[in-house]
Length: 332
Image 1 (cartoon, rainbow, N blue to C red):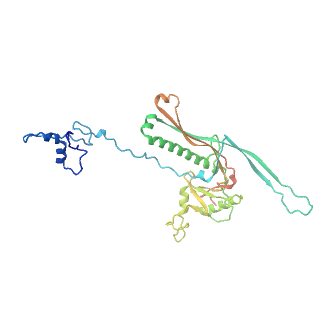
Image 2: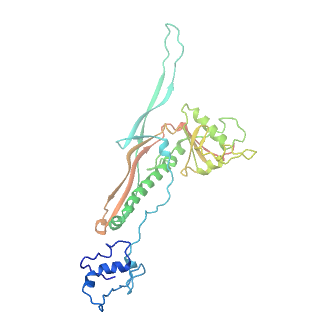
Image 3: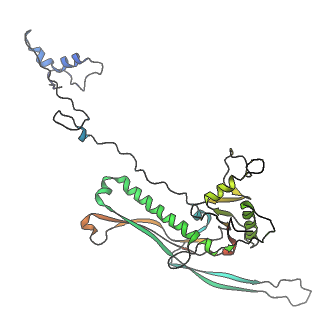
């Protein structure tokens, strides 16, 4: 609607919402109306409507309408828990030396008055735990990082998640060769089916037997790690009457067996379990996970940024004998 702002009339957008179209027109044209004769007319021009349809000669402006942008939808992330089981220590060097007692020949005994007291012997060895770098990177243009601020935050989160995912796999399954950590599954003591004389032990029996085996090392076990499929196979076990052995499924109870927390994680291989003292194993943090931006080669002239995520950690289980690794389907 073409309108003039003359005399004392109010503008269209400033008029009271309760005004009729006629009232708004009179207010807008009050200056023109004042000098009119009866036979005069005042024009009210109606312009073509601007709609949200595709732009064309009729005056629509769909291409000018910018859609709202919601949060970036990332991929689902696994809950990572193995680090939380360990004793984590920050360090400021590239490796850690730790003296470890390897023998205890205790000669303590009752002694008669005036008799010679018995002696004891202890032996130590010096272990060195190296640190390893876990890293990965992506490239992104400066334009996309500036035009989509959410993307920069998402890349930061994704890179840190990737580091944590690889760290968890290394803590469990690293083979200790090259730049790999020594994973607990590969240094743990093997599960001994003869620790108790149980005929045809089921999965729950085997976990109980592994707890006993770990306890016999004089280091109290504090956790159980298994694949989620194995945990739910155990959780859904029923007795002859069809009742769940681990209780009513209507009750929400944290996974546990024999008083120890069960940590279900896809990082553990299906059909395998790890029982023992995780709190007595130390993870050394040299670099906490961090994300940095920089230019590589001719990236500067290409407006490309390299985004690097990395961490530096050391891990060599100091009490491997307190970890028991076994398989659920191993023949008794």
